[in-house]
Length: 430
Image (tube, rainbow, N blue to C red; front, side):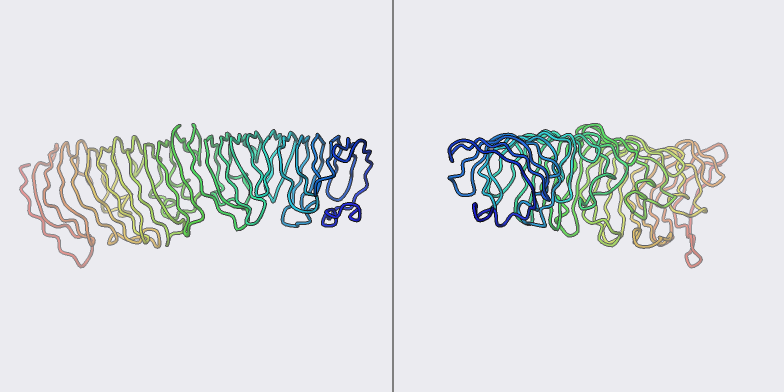
């Protein structure tokens, strides 16, 4: 057939077909039934064979259509089944067809990505396939594409805008660089990237969603850029029920897996980060904790910030708490207490992400006001503490306590190591 139509010589399809053609060369009424190594095509179309590569318009049913065969390009594997209407310059054997199309079908796959129950319409240019509108079920999620395009030449760039619901990241293709964790996401997305040496640059505005058991509030915005090295990400919104240990396991963040951080956090946040491994991770975050179950107690109505750089964690805390045990947070049983009150505290934990920190790695400064607390075995009804913990020494500028068995004030230094010296001056009224 290449002797009749020169453009066919580059089509790598072996086939058998039954066709009838009737009419002038500018409008050949064609019935086609074709079965071959490039898939099955049956239907009726009108051909204009007077233009180079031919022009075609009509409707066909395709089954297991493999564009790699039709274009003689092994890098464009596809498996497409459905009903196609089209008005295309076919450019047979020359380049990709271009013109308008609609598609309805149970399944389509292209270059390792696939979807089911597809309804789509758009047009094809010499450079890309443009999706004007599409609805598809992909990897268990319902996806609506409001605008999109896929490049026809390497590295096959793409951009999609639309909405998706019931997205579970565990089911997406391995080539998509996202955390494969339990999730049920609903979002409006704007994502671009490429299929060869893949990356994604995207923005999503979430509807009510779940991520690793936590609830993401409607209106929360997330960003992701995996083209950067290391990858960058950000977010702004509300989240409830964050299980820190579960997040640590799911996202492979060592410090969040530490049993001392067992608990849940809920609140509003903003975050900008880069990298995922312990050495390269850089994170700046902040927000308000509405409620958190941590360190055997509860935190509420607290303004917080968090920074991670070169493995070191720095946080600030301004808010209230109840029955918090610092022995859990600092992994030191000699600091056992049950504290209720409010605080304004700056904390730095050196090398938290790269090794197990000791008490000497903690620097804590600020002040606390306590009510109905216990320090060691001593009950207090009210207390004020101002000072800093550094190099395993607690320097107290001001201490005032009042309780059923003790009332007094003091200042000085308490050492929690063998080399330090404790020097604490006090005035005990009771």
